[in-house]
Length: 104
Image (tube, rainbow, N blue to C red; front, side):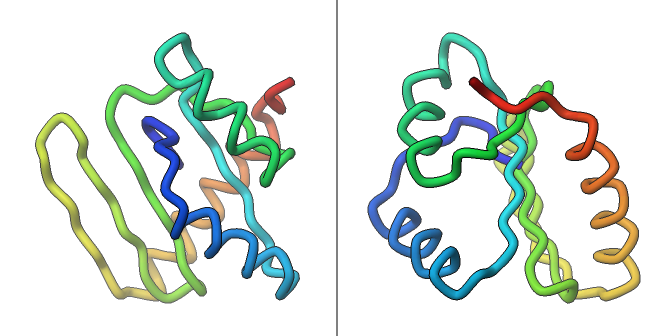
């Protein structure tokens, strides 16, 4: 889940590397006037980005083993390594992702 869809060349390289490795990438992003320009740049790399209403959260689920959660408005980042938590968050994320609208 992306909050501001910031552009970072290292992140772009990482996504391109993961795409070449055929790693499944599913992104939900905040899409509004503030983020539109960056989201459109990301769409060139990740065309299946979908919209989520987001008031200040970022989240990454990695390898079903850990999750990184950023609370933007609280200036707090957590990394939690717990497979049980990751499995539940993954199911919830996929349920939201499946119903979300693709950004056009």
